[in-house]
Each structure stands twice: as C-alpha cells, then as structure tokens.
Amino acid sequence: MVPSKLNADQVAQFHQQGFLGPFEAMSVESMNSLRGAVTELLQTKPNPYPEEGWHASLIPRHHNRFLDSALAYRLSTLPEMVSRMTSIVGEDLLLWRAHFFDKGPGAKEIPWHQDYNYWPLEPPVIISAWLAIDRVTRENACMQFIPGSHRKLLPHIKATPDMAFLEMADPAHVDTSLAIDIELEPGQFILFNERLLHHSEVNTSNLQRCGLSIRLIPPIVRVLKYDSQNHVLPIVSGQDRMGFNQTNVIPPQDD
Image 1 (spheres, one colour):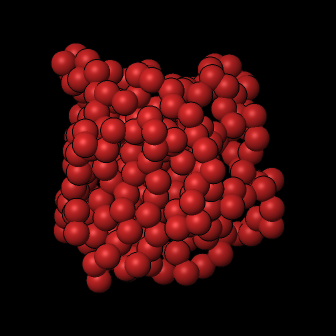
Image 2 (cartoon, one colour; image 1 turned 45 degrees about the vertical axis):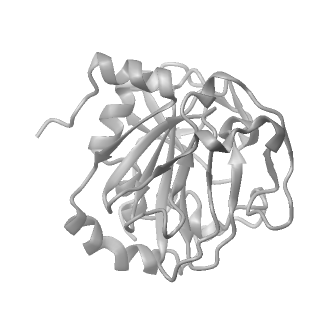
C-alpha cells in the first residue's frame, strides 16, 4: 500500500497554522501491542552510551534511540509520517533527532517554547512529528499549540525551576488564550514546524503519557553540533545531495 501524501489544501493549511493533523501512522491496536517493548527500551541505556554532549533536559535513554534500536528506528520512520513530511519539505529527508517524552504522573510542565531556539542547525528548517504511544488527552497533559504563532520569532529567557526545560518563551509575548489542546489516540501523530509555540502542563493524572518526537531535516540544513560521537543521520527518504552532514543509510538491525 502506497503511503498517503498531503494535498495542496493541506500543505497550505500547514503553512498558515504551523501544524497539521492528527493522522494515523498505525492502528491503536498495533501501537498498544508495542507499548511493552517501548517500556523495556526506555529502561535500557543506549549502546554505546554517550557520556557527554547532551542537553541538560534530555535523558540519554530516551534520546536518539534510533541509533541502536530497530524498534525506535521503525517508529521514527513510519511511512505514513515520512510520506506526509515529504509533501511539505521535499523528497530528500534526514532523520536528525527523535526523543521519547515519557511523561508520567507528576512530571513537570514543559514551558511555552519555539523549538528553533534550542537547535544547532543552519538554516533552522525542521519538520517535526509527534507520535502518540499512549492515549494523550488534556487529562494527562497533552501538548498545546498556538495556531499561527510560527510567523513570529519570540525571545526566550531562563525558565523557572518548576519547568522541565532550561529556557522558555518570554511569557510577555505569549497569548495563552489562543492555545488549543492536541489530543491523540495511540498510533496517531501531528506535524508541526520549528517555530510553532507549544507547551504541556504538569501531568496531574495517574496516567502515563508517552510520545515520540521525530525531527527530520532536508539536506540543505547543516548540523553545527552533534549530540554524541556516534550521532549520524539516517537518510529516510530520497538522497543526500549536499553532503553537509554525517549520514547513514543502514538502520539498526537488532534491539
């Protein structure tokens, strides 16, 4: 079966809003059948285990596991996601980062932010997908977006100690009355760009809320700082015509 592409109206909507979806990457039943394997993966350390080069807010066992796990690679490159992403930024795409946000009961608030602020990329052009591993609702701290907020770059300041990140968008520039909740079923995903304001509350429920954020870049983007010594970027669609980055076309074979 040929993976779905976006039509012209959907691409225009993405450009207007800064996000699009949700879409289904796999069935609820299929994702639920993988939940135990994801839990097991997140209890292990990457191989090789990076000792430095990590952003303070990232937990290594949750980050870039596509480098050593066939399961994480599969979830990061699901055809129904990648095909729609190529509709927006072209057929040539590299997998730069993927991070499991396993937000359990009591987990901290993620502040309002625009992703471009944190990323060592030039130019900072990224297409992101957020894939639901669990059911994600307002009750267990789903993401919130501010539609259209990608058309203005906002200043970021030092975050308060109760936040999960070290920096956040300056609250004086964020109109939270415009926020919408992004609720997803397991196996669904949402697409958004590097400048869209987004956020999630403290998880005040007793429910787990795991999702995988996937970041793809076109080959015109250069990675200025890699996350670890073994950080390479799989070519997940098309080819790398530029040669700016450390790339690899061979996915991990075993978990």
